[in-house]
Figure 1 (cartoon, rainbow, N blue to C red):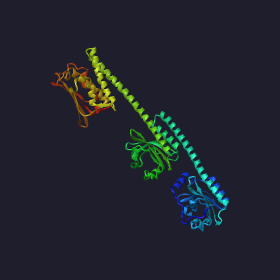
Figure 2: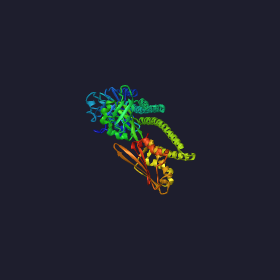
Figure 3: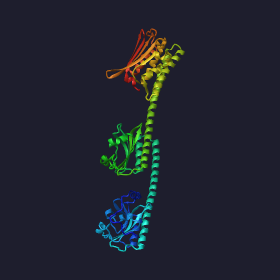
Length: 550
């Protein structure tokens, strides 16, 4: 049994390993528990003392898990005697606190409650760390200290306290595992529920509303919702959200808080996890604003489309809370599913538009094929000629369609449309067909008419013009110039080196198609000149008509 320590030396209470074990036990500042209260009562009766304590020594205080005969639940270390028990191998017994230099000036000795006797058994854990002591106090000195039986009983009860602390932690861990398993089960069930709903829902607002409700209910949050971000990521528009009673809704358009600080993270699609807005450096400056809308902790999970953040799934708690990694992963999972659901709806909407557009285009195409076939058969001298001419014209149309459908848009460059229409005349040689001009996008409305026009010009050139002899050439050029507020396209077809040409005596369907087909489709005019060196055909049309998709 030890009665004294070297004078003036107090054990170090800030040892990191000791404090880490004390924190891990999660016992400080917990509510009274019957098992610990029973120990101090037994200890008081065993030692015949008015005061018995289970004292746990923190870095800068001692806190009493159980106490009898002593009102305060904790004291500063300058009023602690138990602190000296941390370095004891056995009991620490001080018969008269007023005579011991370590405790003679202790405020609990010199003032209320005027304690004079102390006996404490170290609470030594299995790791060897001493976290505090089980002690008895008396208001009278005890020169003889404790009897052997009392000392032995104090030691045994101290071991019981360490066992209780260990078992308490094990029980807490088991309960935590049960809670975790139950929470994990709820999250899985929530994801199944959300998946079933999203699979059949046809409304984005309904999707986001149900997702917000499921997340809020599952995570016991105060507010959840989905907001759409503008292109700059500076404002968020919340169409619907889910809140608990007493928590304000955020439906409406709002500036994105802390754009300078949080904007880059949002742009990169990073999840924002804030346990306490007042303490986190990313939100501390706007904590007052966030508090006014009942935000004490938050989760922001961006929703991405084509590499850009287009929406934000948010979860708010009115009070600070620690967001567990599993909870963050759950919200990310929900956001991903909402993103997939929204993408599905938009794809379905786009498909419906494409289907309507395809139907419209097919009707137009069939009408054009019918008109070409009718006019070709009407003007052809015999069936074989009609068949060949019709096949060539339909081939020119098909090449234009190939160009339109192979692009990312339903349009193609003017050079590609012209080359496609001339493909059937490749045997003339590339040196004889020369194309030059700036890039111009040709919309679907003009592409078919342009292809047919160029095909008719090339066919006539092969029969009667420059392409009917080896020395002949054709130059197709185009320019874009401003004509007042509107830009105009000028397309020129010039033949050289062929036989002399003259205006036809009879205007067939091909001639009418050249003169009125494209100009009639997009506006403008066509002028054909029969020069001595060859045919010249010049089209002038508004650029907006050439580029129009429909």
